[in-house]
Length: 254
Image (cartoon, rainbow, N blue to C red):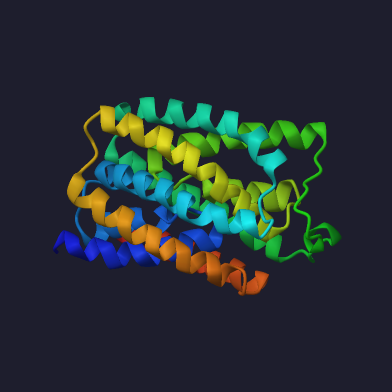
């Protein structure tokens, strides 16, 4: 299949990624491996560049709408970056089959987290428009640890870390879902950029994949951000779950 097909695939990935704060890698990585036959590490490298582009394209709209918790984002940025650097340095030692099954395990974990959150009524904090997260010392320790893990996963799997950051902020820190998505969009740009640089040094960036993926995902991200502000929270959660189920099935069948 021609690499030109990456462009429309990336548009769809960018739209879903910006709507859900994931960066689009959750769709782009399996699309490149399953549909395009790309080696998964090259798909991950292309996805990281596209994820960084998604963040740059989408975060401005979230900022203007007041849906980014700056205090929370800054506090989680350093551990997330440290995790991303560590993951990028380890990628040369991780077999491709292990990367694929780690991806599946991650998606199943997050799927369970989101389904559990859907069983609970929306808290009063979720209705607040100010996007100010209040956390105690126990929550802070969990958030820092999981943010470092999200950074490492971002580097190894090319998903931007949003798969952990969004459920982390929404279910553990009780951040309103739209604010969690906006703050995650801010975080994934920095982590994906750091990880992509490490892939560049290791010679794993394939221009035929990177260019159409980055261009398409930027266009899709702008569309997705506009839809995200109009779609009900329950619908966002259902889309999140549906996308993850699709990812697990396709990767497991490959």
